[in-house]
Length: 270
Image (cartoon, rainbow, N blue to C red; front, side, top):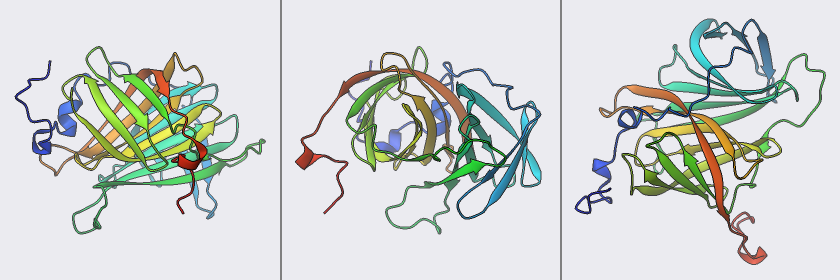
């Protein structure tokens, strides 16, 4: 139980990212070898072409190789995560939909204090939807969505770690730790949501207290048996060393809120 004498509002005492890592990956899925030996080329709307060549544990991209992990999300749908060895302040999340011939690349970057603008989180994210070169299919590429707004979901990362997420609006969500070293802590942070397939979403967030960000891909099709795969990236307790680790979770829908049309948080701001 949380010590009632602890001041949960004192954010200077909150657990750093590297302090959360031990045991947080207990429900992580096994590394998939389905991409081994393949070259996959993505092209985004600007014309940028990126080739990824996968070995068993490394991916070659932009002339250098980095260790990676791949997780099978659905049939011919993979979540790939790697830390850019040439740019230690950046991590890459790559969603590859081989069936639909599309991809989504998310780059998480740790800003220096000089780069950071007022109001920005320390870790920023950019999203690039792409098509797969040589794909015979012509499906829509991933796009932002409001589909999660109003849902309250329980995510269990291990026997000791559990959180609930409340998806508030296109920009904000609230998290609360229900079990684990952060039990009792809660906050509202920035988020981005993209639809990959019907019922399968990339959910990414950027924290303002702890210098970190996360990218997850979550299967919401069965509200009683959800599954997610993800990664956290940010700075360690010293605020100087990049910290990067992957995880997985099992989830279930706790409730869903339906707003009257006049008060719908997904409606455009007038």
